Amino acid sequence: MSYRKVNYEDVEQVSSAMHFLSDPLETEQVGVTVARCDPGWNSKPHDHTDNDHEEVYVLIEGEATVVVDDEEVSMETGDALWIPPESTRQIRNGDEESAFVLVSAPSIGEEDSDGGEWLLSGFAG
Image (cartoon, rainbow, N blue to C red; front, top):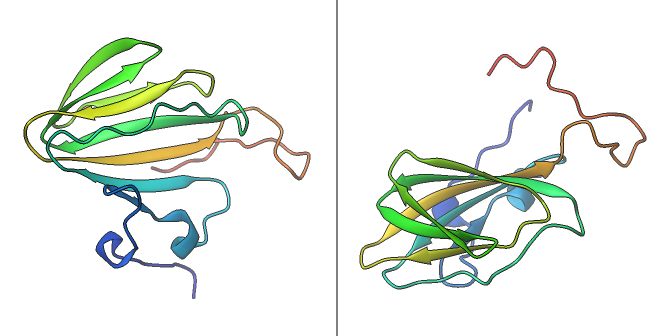
């Protein structure tokens, strides 16, 4: 089979919001998480300095705030936010449910574990 499929609702929820899809999809170079955030939910502040992963947070439903290095970034449906590995980030949800798709990957151009480079040339999108 040349693809793998999973429904995020079939993946055990962690921290009362996160559905980590990388393991069931057996991804090798990208992390994908769906976060369905209840009203008032906050994630733990964290960074990705140790694994050098940049992240993109895409808000697909509702409104929320993402705190990046102590700066509050207001998000509404359709907004995408890029966060570098060394920045501390935290989702702070408001009074209504929201939903994010979180994507993480090694920084482009950095050497991967095989000694090569992770390139986007030829990416059809």
